[in-house]
Image (cartoon, rainbow, N blue to C red; front, top):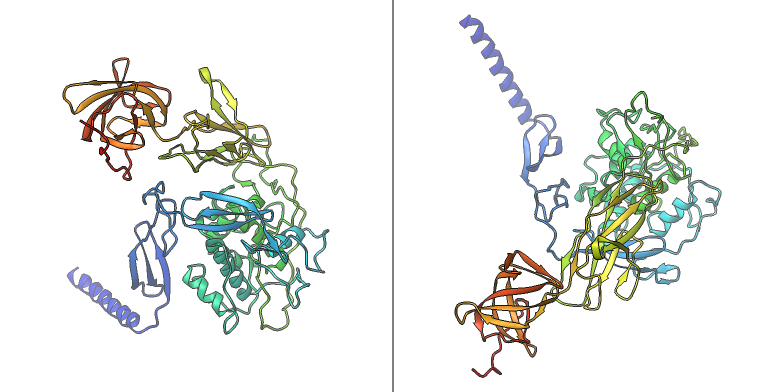
Length: 566
């Protein structure tokens, strides 16, 4: 037995030594890897780790700045400097924070020579003689053209919608989409060869992770792999429930399945037929790419449907598609910015069949609230607060009705006015002004989908700056502790917070709201319209008097008792 074991051990050692010799004398084939803790590059042949480091997260709900993986434990985004980028729609443009998604403003395009001077969106016209209003892809081509992502091919007036796309063209479009989405502009230009600039950009941005024969026609699966990485993950959030392996011709173990399912679930693709087949090995046409680009850059154009196992007694036919627009269901995914400067005769390929999709029956996921509105406490008057809600599932379009609680919890619909706007949208805007009667009210939103299903958000409150005029003052124990009684004019104050006392516009005392009392009972917080006694422990300054104003302390407050005579 010992001899057998010795022989086996000797063979293992020889094989191990041979493997080490071979692995030490070959050209590494690097592949990028990642897990929850780090990302690294390893050789796909010998598995040697070539590079490794921890993830680099900036904020919660944002990806690693190197590899793009998300980390829910990263810091919250409640307090940060906005990183704004201009977004564009056909009708308008708006500014959105890349970190938290806050929309600061929206306005119509300011056209000069048919180009918006703010966002560079082109005026909605059709410059192509070979794209007619009757074509299923007409609106998508115009939309992609206006965004500056597709141009004419061979001339400025011919789009050649049935031409196939090369890998080089797909990579150029992916690079331009990524730059437009992340910066609001496209500044990339051709290199040598013409596509090299875009290849380098996509490698730096982790969009492509392999080498291609750039002048070959791109397959649908190849195109989808590139475009699934062309925008950040938070721009391709799932809106459709698609079970693994439920795309008929794309099993879950397919090499390209992660990218394909990501685009299906995000509503970018719906397939080439009523069964939602992907036809991954086929080539992709420019008109099909235009539809994909339109959906990627404008979330309102995305398609809602679902693919999952249906119980035998269900009335729903799982094969029915739910593509609710009349465009070609062959939702390919790429659109080229401009035609390549080099390249020969197009190779004739069997085209993808344009099927008519059955739109009679839909399978929708349950209507749920994806993002709840957040209340706020203002430090000063001026500025605005946006209460935003996002829903998932149900059947679009949605309607939004913002409301507030009146006496005895009676719900009252909010109307647009001097201090309120956008009451019928997903983002209600309130002006933080003393005259705004909605400050301090419990506000919620009722969202209704196209089938009448309703969901209601949590109630939130928006407060102006805390302010209370002192009606009476009494000494508690010593000359350093007082009870300041009055009616809260605005805002919210919590027990233990630091406060300042204002007299004639000057800060005359700073201290701590040690306790809040109402009807001889201690409270954790007091809000607008409460009659409350603030147990105030003075840290510095003069004695508060009737008529003084209690406000929350701010770092900008400077004690000034020069006018006070003891």
